Length: 261
Image 1 (spheres, rainbow, N blue to C red):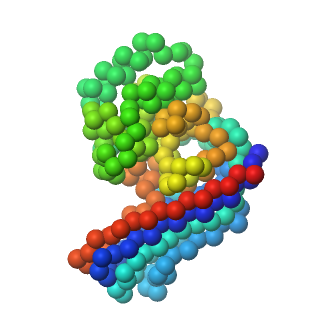
Image 2 (cartoon, helix red, strand yellow):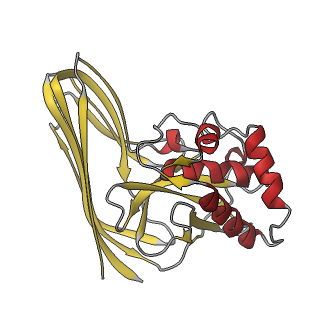
């Protein structure tokens, strides 16, 4: 077991003041069989004087929801704390819901993805754990990492056709393949050492536990990963969602520091 100290922050700077800002922040990691979160603190600036509450979404993710009515030129939020993390990719929990087997708008399987699955399935190993790792490697080998080539609304099918994307796209393409193989799986948003911003990977059900694999890095996760939110796809796990009033554009700055000891 390793101790991981982490600091994460996102700041939005608006070109002109925004107001009537409603937001939902899935930014509060929880303890599980692999990670024990300790000394967690969060901050929001400006701190809402109108409404702020902690809630839990439909997939059990802790979140902060709020409303800022007054004009503000920036919005900043972040967390810091420590975690005791096991150097293994397995998460023990109760059997997952069947909904994790069904496609979503971002993870539907079009003909090219079905063909890709059929192609790699011909040489896939028999054991579920081996199949998970095999499919993850196949996605990694098929795609090229290209920052800025996709957006948060890009579907797995669109990224696959382009042959490039970022961690969100790698994870969602792997979700499609696993679900075609009838393996229950979920999208994970979190922090990864040496990545510099939030990261995404996949947890797939072996029949007794989840195995967490990172198709972007072509590896099973280790103590350098801290999960924050989980769901069917990116939409269920987005760190920050919000709407505001104002004729302005936002510039985002993200910082992440992780130290493992």
